[in-house]
Image 1: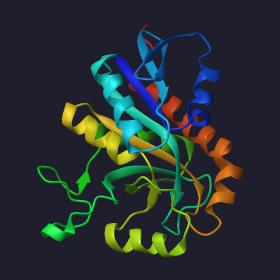
Image 2: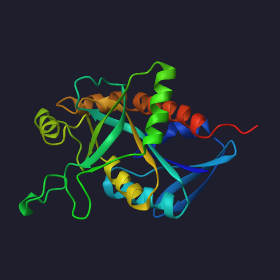
Image 3: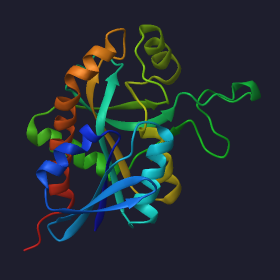
Image 4: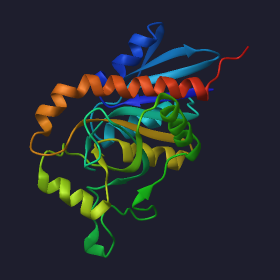
Length: 233
C-alpha cells in the first residue's frame, strides 16, 4: 500500500524525515516529494507550503502522480474550543472552508455549489487514531476543523468561527485536502496538534510551540502507521 503523509510547512514533516532518513525524492509541480520504504509498503511525504491552493495541488499530485491510496495530514492548528490547550491533539470529524462566501445567492457560509459546507474524513482512519490515543493515554478530541487562507490571530475572528461553523480548531489547508480526497475517492484523515489559541497572542504562541506541536503530531501518525500497515511475518 502507498500512503501519503502531508504537512503544510517544512517543520511539520521534518520529524518524519528524521525518523526515516533513507528516502528518495522527486520534484513535481514546484514541490519535493519524499518516497520512503516502510515495512512492505511505501510512504510518500511532502510539505505543500501554506494555504489551500498549495495543499490541494500537493494532495492531487500524491494521488494522481504517485498513486497514494490513503492520505494522512499531519500538522498544527489554532485552538478554538476552550478545552484545547497548546500541545493537545485534534482529529477532524468534518471540515469546512470558512472563507467561501456566496451568501449573496442565498447559500450558507462555506457552501460550494455541487458540494456542501462540510466534508467528512474516513471513519476507519479516525477509528485507528482513537485506538492509538486510547492505548497511549492521550486525549484526542474529534471535532470541526475550519480552513481558510488567513492566519487567525484575533478574538473577534475566533468567536465568528465558533458561531458560524461550530469550529473547534482553525488552520489553512485541511478542508482543501479533504475536498481533493473526497472528489478522488481516497480515504483521508486530518490530524492537528494545537500550536496556539488563535487569539491576540497567536503569533507569539505559534512561533514558540510550532516544532513541539509538529513533533507531537508526527509521533502520533507514526503510531497510526504501525496499526494501518502491520509488519508482515
